[in-house]
Structure formats: C-alpha cells, structure tokens
Length: 157
Ligand code: 4NP
Image (cartoon, rainbow, N blue to C red):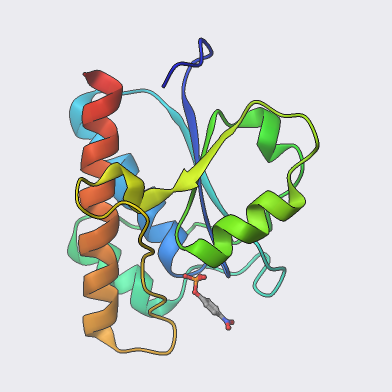
C-alpha cells in the first residue's frame, strides 16, 4: 500500500452477482467494525448481468452474516475504474487476466488476486459458486471474509 492517495478498493469477478458482491459485503462489514472509511465497490468483467441484483444465493449468504446486499446492482468494469480505485482485487486468475487486458496503457491502480491477501493462499482464486449449491456460497464467504479481514488489518496496521 505504497500509494499516497487514500486507499479505494474495487472487487472484480466475472458476473458481479456472486463472488465480488460477497467480497464487497465482507469488506464493508470488516471495514465498518474497524472504523475504516474507504471507497469500495465491485464490478464484473462481463456485461451479462448489468443492473441486476446479486444472485439470490449470494444475497442469502450475505444476510446470514448480517449484510443486506439486495440493493447492490451489477455493473461492468470501465476504464475509469483504473483511476478511481487505488486497488483492484480480482477474484480469480481469469478475472485478473481479463482485467489486465482492459487496463489503459498508463494507470496507477494496483491489480492483484484477492487471495494474495491471505497468507498461504497467494496465487489462488476464489471458486466460482454460480453452478454450485449453498455450500459453495458458504465457501465463497469464508474465502472473501478471510481476505477482507486480512486487507483491513493491512490498512489499519
Ligand atoms: P460471479 O459468478 O463471477 O462470481 O458473479 C458468475 C455469475 C454468472 C455467471 C458466471 C459466474 N454466468 O455464467 O452467468
């Protein structure tokens, strides 16, 4: 976190209806507990679900952890994201490659995998739960909340 600008964080997955909204929710929750005031959002690499609320299973999982994400609306990542956010966290390796492919030639955003935040999980992706069941959404929450906690610790540390 060597950038001198205030930290701002974007979470990025494919559809912006499962993993990245859960990452946003977990981070908002952890940041709130820590009293951190950080600009945070999520987006997708695809345009498939623009304007839609998160997947019902993601909504249910977030609510189990006390966060209502029913009013989140999916959007696609745009070039301005690379200047608006200091840090963009991709949920998996495909998302990171797609992110790098749309990055403007010059930008200051730090692009990385979300799980790089978690010791022992560096270089790994968060599994896509879209074709899975509730247990897969539980696993997604476990991953993104571990990363959110680690990120908040770094930001306050
Ligand atoms: P997400 O999950 O990238 O975590 O939001 C997906 C959502 C939708 C699709 C795939 C993954 N889809 O194929 O529509």
